[in-house]
Length: 556
Image 1 (spheres, rainbow, N blue to C red):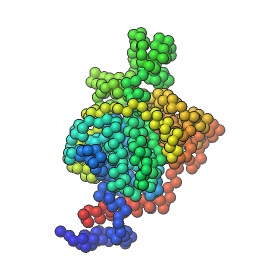
Image 2 (image 1 turned 60 degrees about the vertical axis):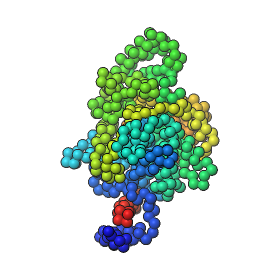
Image 3 (image 1 turned 180 degrees about the vertical axis):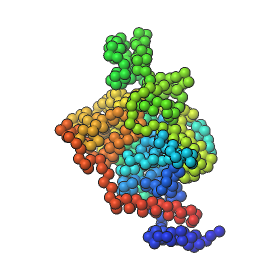
Image 4 (image 1 turned 90 degrees about the vertical axis):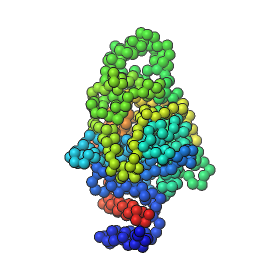
C-alpha cells in the first residue's frame, strides 16, 4: 500500500515530461481541487473518439434517495463549454417520451460528439465501437451542457442498488413524481457535484414531452429559490415541439382539425378533398371532435389514404429504411399516445409506416447510439456500473407513466406577468406531423399576451436571406418560433438553425432579421471567431481535467 507521500511522488513522476504540467500538478495538490466533488466523475477519453475531447466531460451519479423515499441514483453527463466555462451559462437539456433517454439528445442532436450511420466506418469494422463524429453545431459552443437520464431507470439511472433493473424497477411514475425527481437531481448536482456553477446563468431546455418536464421543473426551481440564501441563477426555459398538458396538447382532447390543416397546408392531399372535409365536417366539429358524422369520418379516412406514408416525427424525412429508435418502438395504444401521434399509420406488424421525402441530415443516429451505449468500454468510460443496462422507454414503453399535468398555459402567463427575471421560448419544427406548428401556434396565441416587434416575422441564419423560420415575440419575454423544414427533433433535422436561434436566445440577442435588399451575408455572419488563445485555453483545461482524475485515483 503506497503512503500519501509515495502517491504524491508517483503522480509527480507521471508529469515529469512537461515542466509546465508538473507545476500545474503541484498547484492542484497544494490547494483544494476546484471540482473536487466531481473529479471522480471526470471522463478523460471516449471509445470511438481518438485524441483529446473537445472540452471537459464528466459522467456519474447524484443520489436522490432521500428526496424520493427509496434508493435512487440519477445519472448525469456534464460537458463544459468550449468557450469560457467559468462564465458561460449552464444549459440543461432533457428529452421527453415520457421515458426517453436524454443521452439520445446529447449524442444524436446537440452534443459535441455525435453518432449516425457515418459512425460505421473502418474503425468500427476493427473495434465494433461506432465512431464519434464532431458536431460543428454543438450547443457547447455557447454554454456548458448538462443532461440527466430521468426518470430512473431511464438510461443508466437506477434504483435500489440494481443498475440492471427493468423499466418498472423504480416504481410507477407520473408528472408530479417526475417533478420531484428532476428538481432533486438538479439541486443535488449543484450542491454535491458542481457548487462552483451556482453563479452561472442556468437555462432549462428540452423537447417533446419535456414540454411538461421542463416547465414543471421550472416551477420547482422558482419555489426552491423563494426565500433561500442559496438560489440557482435561473434565467429561462425553452421547449421544442412540446406537449403542454393533457387538456391542451398530448392528451385525449379535441378533434383532427390541426392535422387536417397540417397535411393540407403541406400539399399532402387534394384541394377537392379539403373542401369536402370542411363542408361536411365543419370547422367547429373538427376542432372539438364532437359530432363527426359517418360521412365525415369516411372523408378523413380518405385523407389518410391520399396522404400516404410519412414519418410521424418529420414529414419530409428520407431515412426510410433506417431502423430508428422511434420507428422500432411499437406504437402504444393509450389515448395519450394516440393524441401525440395523430393520424399515425400502423403496419400489420404494429410499426408506423413511412414514406419518402427529402432531408439534409445523416440518418441512423438512434441505432448507432444504442450500439455505442451497449459497449462495456463505454460504460467504463462513463463511470457506469459494468452490469448496468441502458433503458429507454420512449412514450412510456416498458414502464408505467401516467400523464397527470393537465394544463401548463397558466404557468406561461404567470412567468410573463410576474417573473421579469425569466425568459421563455416555445419553438416548433414546421414539418413535424406529431406535434405540429399549427396547434402550437394556436395555444401560444391563446395565452393572450401582447405581441411585440410588430407580430409574426421571418428570422434568418445570416441577417440576409437565408431563412430559418418565423418568430412572434410577446411582452413578458415570451417567444414562439418556428423552424422551416424541421421535424420533431429540431437539433437533428436542422442543426445549424437550432444552433443559431438557441444561441441568440441564450445570449438574449435579437433573432436575425430578413433583409429583402441584401445580396449576400457579411463574411463575419455566423463565424465562431475562436482565437488561438481560446483554443490554447481549452487544451490547458483538458490537461488539468486529466490530472485531476489521476490525482483522485492515486489519492483515493
